[in-house]
Length: 270
Image (cartoon, rainbow, N blue to C red; front, side):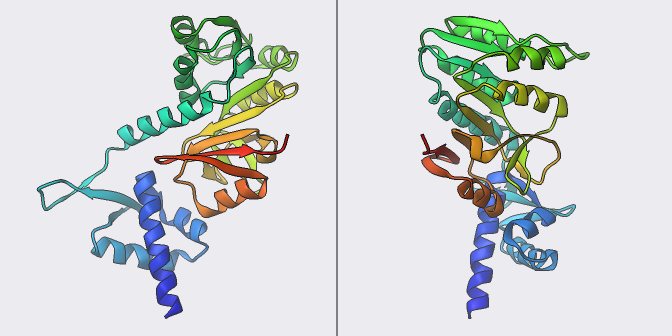
């Protein structure tokens, strides 16, 4: 009886995780729920028979019933992602106070938080993505500077030793960065190792660090730039697997705020 209850509970959690992410691989699910891939495939067979999801190429995909129809249709991933990015950006903007000196690193979510700073006064913003400059000039009254550095072909992000030197020399009240994943030691990862080096430089004299992420991968590829225990805040969508959540909580961050599909963690240490 206990095994049946455990299976039911796990299957309900699988449906919820796949619903939030849209698509999850068998290996990711096996890691998230600490069971074998054989067990996960059995769960997915059952859930597919019950029409909660569909399986394709080693992955589980969430499907939703269209009103008035007797067929299953996939939930549009782009709309879900855009809504989550905006909600994460809105909570991250709450960490930025008037009169602050802030470095905002390159990223989709970090770019979206810029218009949300329109009501702040006397900000000093430093950027390393030149595509963000028009957005700041349009929406935010502030002192604006670029980090310096070099551009690769077709890139708008300033990287390299010059960017690192200029940022390491700044005294910053707050740094806001976008991560792509975690490793099992609780380190935050950036997919681009050169950008991770820029992040590290910005953190040298930062008083507070806030990180945003959308569906950060556990043991994803990338270079470490900061341990989660150093963060003043972390904002991400709630489609995180149990091991990732455990890492965050063990590092001393507490769930401070929940919105639809979004979690905000804060370090309550002074």
